[in-house]
Length: 136
Image 1 (cartoon, rainbow, N blue to C red):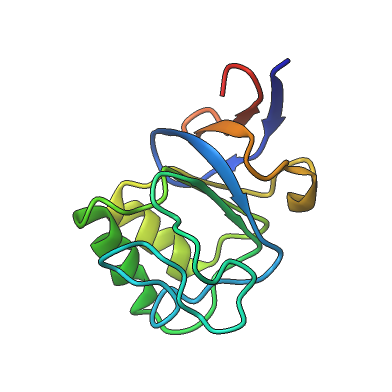
Image 2 (cartoon, one colour; image 1 turned 90 degrees about the vertical axis):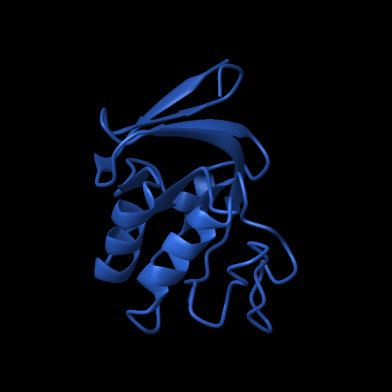
């Protein structure tokens, strides 16, 4: 069964992958390896996991504005997330997603913690939709 969740579209395009969900903010500068897409931030709940090809779900970014360029570098290296879902996208993440071509939505009509980790999902930033489930 597929569930459609409305959200605010920010980036452009569509991305599909398994949901990687955390309730902790992410700093891309120093917190994610731009060559591998692995979360390296010590103590982060996703430490050691890759964001490559996943629909990355986190509340918001944190840290330096250089994080936008790290998102761009992830895309250039082929290890970017397939899409991003934020509770509230702030300028660092929005700018990075836009320059990297990563679909981005925020303000989903359900809490982030309601999104089931590992489930297949499609983010359609143009339509402002998150599709979770069989058709993911």
